[in-house]
Figure 1 (cartoon, rainbow, N blue to C red):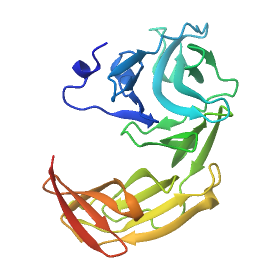
Figure 2: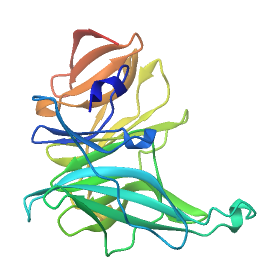
Figure 3: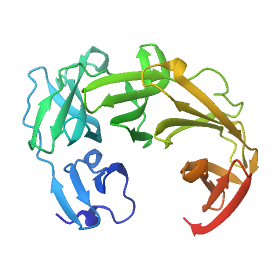
Length: 266
């Protein structure tokens, strides 16, 4: 399989573990693929043969991680099952949710015994992976009471955990962006105002324990910084990659309050 022909412009990744990458091709209706960029070897994950008599299965998103207990790579597929009867109105359709797991060691799919929560996943590529836990940005709760948070899947125990966001410092008068990164092997939340002229009301939190809202630990505020569009991710010593309004890549050291233009455009 020539993976690069599908990635002529952008390549989004679900995750990378020990040099093995899971590109985001499934949402385009293509096969799930595991790819080793160093050797350019690819493995096409076989399609699941599991059927559901309740209706049609639609993949909502996938996650890729490593099971430290069994020393195995796993792909988890979140599925939405619904009755495709065209005579049913949308609000009359019954939806339920399941999760399937593919194990690289066995080369096969199976259904996860725990029920998959039917939360709304944020499809803006806010996914993280750390310590055997794959997480999605999601809306958590029961209609109509949904709260922003993360939905996490434990690759070893094959259970789902949900964590709502911390209270305070999460709203800006101009609106608030929320992005998740990994910092010091912890899922970390960055919130910042939508003002594109400068970065302000920017706060950082780290999650110490999955499933426990009270374990969010507030780290430090950033800014205001003029001409910054958004944060992109962490690097060493809590340094932060930023993108400015001209599309350039910057590196900001919050301890020294020093900004470095990395001379990378686009």
